[in-house]
Amino acid sequence: MNILIIEDERPAAERLIAMVREFDPGIRITATLRSVKESVEWLSRHPAPDCILADIQLNDGLSLEIFQQLPVTSPLIFTTAYDEYLLKAFAFNSIDYLLKPIDKEKLFRALKKYQSLKQHFTVDLPSLTEQIRKQTPITDRMVVKKGTDFIALRMEQIAYFYSEHKITFLIDTKGVRYIVDKPLAEIERLVNGARFFRINRKYLAIINAISQFRQIEKGKVLVNLIPPVKDDVIVSQENAAAFKSWIGK
Image (cartoon, rainbow, N blue to C red; front, top):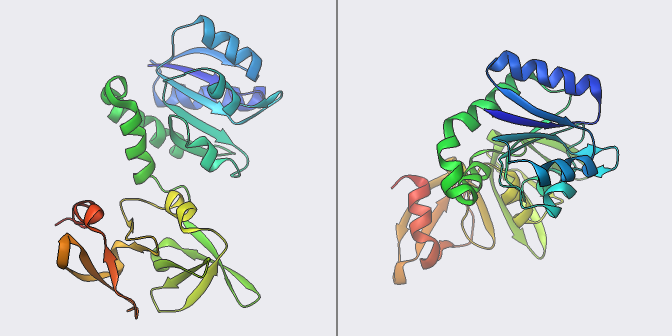
């Protein structure tokens, strides 16, 4: 495997190289680059590496600018000390996003993820990275508001989200309602798509909150949630097959 490292801090780059070689001594580091400009020039003159490890914040800008300028098809593992660029990073061929200081075991898991799926990269990278995004949660908690308090809930405490009058609410497994300062579309990108499903424009639910469902007229699906809701929660005919596949029917 050939890996390109883009990192402007020498100690961080050296530590990353050491961890990569500990993971697999046979991995070849093709180059260690320190800026957007240097990276664009190098990638323009060399074959694409198998994988790229890139710090997001470089001394002359964001590494995201590299991939906006060049059609790089290599899978990307982003590293950063901040999480504000999570959603932007996943707009590219990103398979993981590691927060600094880099945890060795998390880096190893990211590299194993690449190895286990690399046979697909050359044939269908867009659908592969979409699949990885759905299976890899960007966050493992959700900050919500109750009165004047802000509370961090773990994903396993969440039953479902819903939108009403342009406000997003979260219902936990005990039936307590909180306000979330994010639209459903953004929350959908943040959570694990293997566990959460966008039932319709109003509801986004975790799989454990689905108590039962049945097909109704015109191929639609009526879903019962726990805790229960007053509305009829309906999956459209267009999304019914995807819902049944998600829930394992």
